[in-house]
Image 1 (cartoon, one colour):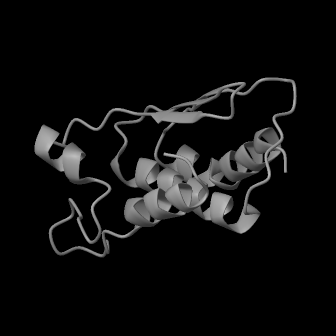
Image 2 (cartoon, rainbow, N blue to C red; image 1 turned 90 degrees about the vertical axis):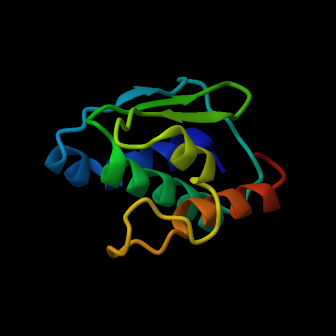
Length: 120
């Protein structure tokens, strides 16, 4: 699989949601293909869960960087999140929404799937 392509497809699938939340992503993806033997379904779910959280909590910014070594970094600000909240974001069932529709599983699942594929 080519990480560049999977990441691009995931970002494109969220275009309407980004636009609706006035998020204009800055995207850094190298031109040369980065090939990895990964579970494409798991990778798509990881990216979807992360991007879904960006849609919910970003203050309107998002930087996505794919590096030549295959590392993907997502950066966004979320002024309503305290340091304590940020430290718990990947905990199972933790949600910052206090009783709203969030299950608190998205980032926990992303973390688990990433670890199962041997990364962090």
